[in-house]
Length: 638
Image 1 (tube, helix red, strand yellow):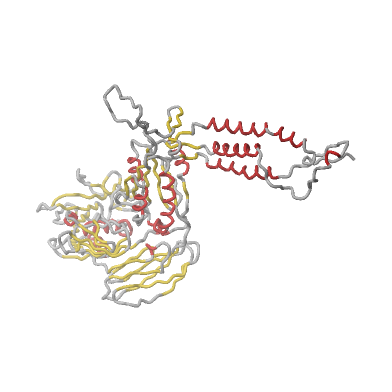
Image 2 (cartoon, rainbow, N blue to C red; image 1 turned 180 degrees about the vertical axis):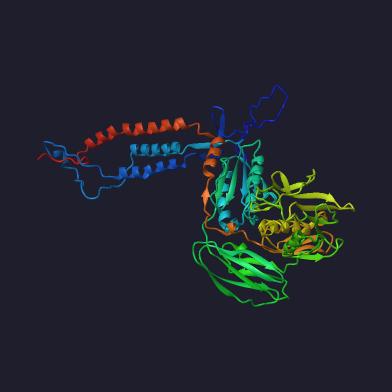
């Protein structure tokens, strides 16, 4: 808000001392000022706030006063000894309507003025300090569910920000997203510029942590007086220094909640009803080989999930599952592409039973080919102690049949290969003595002995390799029946696949991390999406659709894929609600940046003076009524 009012200096030119005396020249006279203590206010120009707007309800006394003064005065009976006083006075009606035409009187106007002054005092006017400055930081929730209420959010923000802009003479606005990867939306002093920037806000992220964004917002307030407002679509509990503005309403929604694609092009999709009422929708498949897709109707019970599956022809490379649209559009379309993972070539060197068992586990994984020589392999399966020219899975030699199984507890380290896996049911023989090097990363322990570790070393030709060392006899154990064993092997194979060069064709969830070879990541990558090119940040786009990751300066695609929105928590709109928690904070800010009306004692004295004047004028009215017996409703004595 622009600064208003005079600065207090007169409009004379600066001259050496002594100052010249102005006798006949006109002077610019500053606006009349009210001065109270340390506060100076241009009375006609300074903006004001009312700390208690409910005080204006006192103005309801005005029609009550008018009504009272319009009531017909009640007749009074007075006994007299003669009627000659009434002979020349026309009789007046003392019955009929209780209301009569309003007539001016001094008590009436004094009472009206007292009511107006009292309403002004009760509303608690406060004058805005012209040097007041505040900072308002908006943290926009990047959650995808916010996209269901774009118009309501813009309308509410225009109303709320307009109220905040009047809380100080100068306001510094900041707008950021709760997704720390996104750039700042706006920084400036114009509320209209802020609203225009928010029109470009596109929330597409799944469920995420907002603590980093709140820390950034707190950093923007250092050294100044300000407020942080978190804009979301549901009620949320946040620290006391964060105000919440929620804009939303419970809405029914049904959509795709996940798609998986297997070779050659067999797909399975989940269709979920995120509401408390039955949904009837139509779905169909769009691809470049058909111009008139067949529509099918499906009925989904409240809270239920249906599984749909099918297979596309060999000449179709990409397709989209479509659903009739609703308020939440992100889960109404599920793109999918024919997958083509980079093959991992595996050489199995060990001939023992453990080697055969691990080979059977690896054969169950997608995109795995077995080769006979180490030179053609990307991954080698060998025994502990053997050298390998590639990344390797090293196994312990077969234990004697007389070895006893150890039921002791297995403890897993926090690592990407073992995260969220349960190893408590593993039964195996006691492991061999294995030295743990400084560069080793232990994965599994039993009785302070390493069962599995990840070793970073070098091959004979100096190439950096990683070795997953499984330090127990897998054949004489129940490892093959533990899901954790297969998952850990799959994760290690995928980490090897991520470093193999070649074009990848994958299906991913929106925002899912996509590993690429280090040699590819060393260059500049650009993601080509339906919204246009954007820098590749190591993950799939936040919006569903097909995309390509291109290496800058070449026409080669490092990756082609389809991103599908599959966050069922964001698709559930039943908990959306509207809530404005900024009112109290805005009131506190206004009280801090304004000064109370210095004339409040004068207004109170005026109320008292008006009431006393109205009361003091009543005896004169009574005497004038007594001089007019007809007006007083006099009756002759019976």
